[in-house]
Image (cartoon, rainbow, N blue to C red; front, side, top):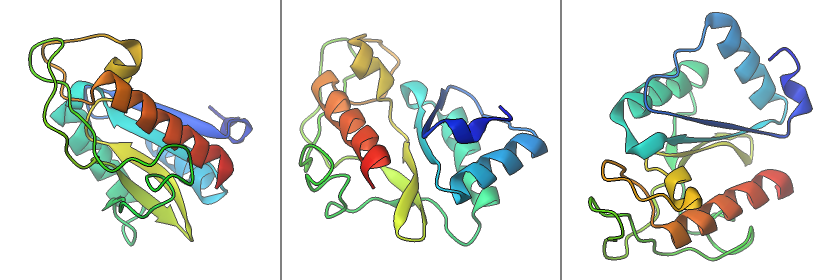
Length: 157
């Protein structure tokens, strides 16, 4: 969108490589460099999107690749919502969950702020309350807490 700067937060999700055009890449980089925020997730934890998104971020920010977001980050330590040390993942069968694990969030930092927050695991199905057999993502309660923290961080920091 030529008016990208009107939006404080962008959300991107998909199953396949985002495959942005050269113009779209330039606009996205300009948006992020000027203070914009991108929240992205691999819908259903799909590898095609994960590989494509990682390649996109490496192209846009070769000196600042995606990095793991540490537990002491405001995103997870309670400064931007909930303190989140452990999360449960949705299981392969609807309604099942895993033992608690550390959240898997990554990001791109521009200066001292996370400009991009990326989850290689699905958050959306947990927000929708949809249990899908093929989805690799967060259990609903944890998806809600993560999404809330991400949005609060985007608007606060």
